[in-house]
Length: 365
Image (cartoon, rainbow, N blue to C red; front, side, top):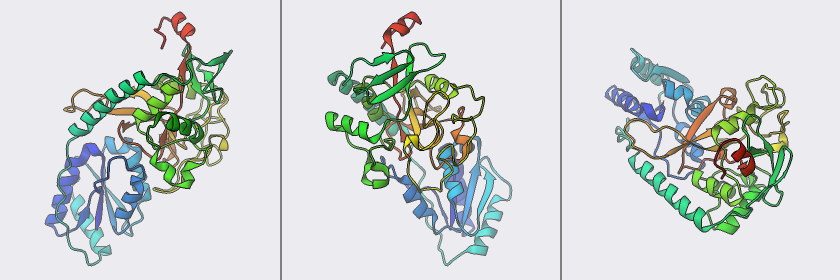
């Protein structure tokens, strides 16, 4: 069996390749349908990839920019390895795949060609509906803490459980020194009745001191508002990652990256987050801005042509424990569907000081 690895933007090319392989008698498997909200989708995908002898990797700018696609390619262990071809058409690619499959084939029969994927129209409509639901929820649930305690460039929220620091170059903005923990997120779940993350079903994700992950963007935004803050604008997150002046590519103690500085590069569908203080903080005091878990940001990701309006996708920053180093760089950015929780995506609080915002010419929150 050949597993076809592709970015969502290249779905049409992947279906064409599957059809061409089927015509030559070669069975192939594309990404299986994944239930919405499955935070452990990688486990399901790893199970699907396991019997495949060869991976057909469709290369394109979208595939190269996707940490999810690169994770599955690094995680493939079939005997025939990974063969690369351009998504816009690679002469001889089917011939090469067929030859590799023949060398490693078992008694397989070609499966029927999978149906073409649905459009994103329904997903966008659900995301927009969730945005409206979030606005109604926030109107009915005032913040647990309406004001932060502040001392110089430091501030504290949630009864002083959350420490924040002023972000250089972003007047009035403070960012949490660490991602939000399970302990604090449990307080939000208990008070709000919002659903707990599915990640808590696994003990390796549920310890109180670990970063909370596995919530939708809407639940992350609701939690941040309830705690008296908000999700960080991408520019604020980026400025905080640059703070400390190491001049390096990574938001670590010295601007470099290795196993002692950041939790990254782990095997596909394996491992779990680690406590934010498991690695040294940046010179500015921020932990977890490089690897371990991605942070939801407030910003929308531009919609693709034909999708229509609506903030269906949101920016995520920082990289996760299964990502290679290039996705953990300060300048690296990606997006996730707002309605899709992920085991490697969590949140970090930002807070705006009203007086500073007024002096800076912006409208306070």
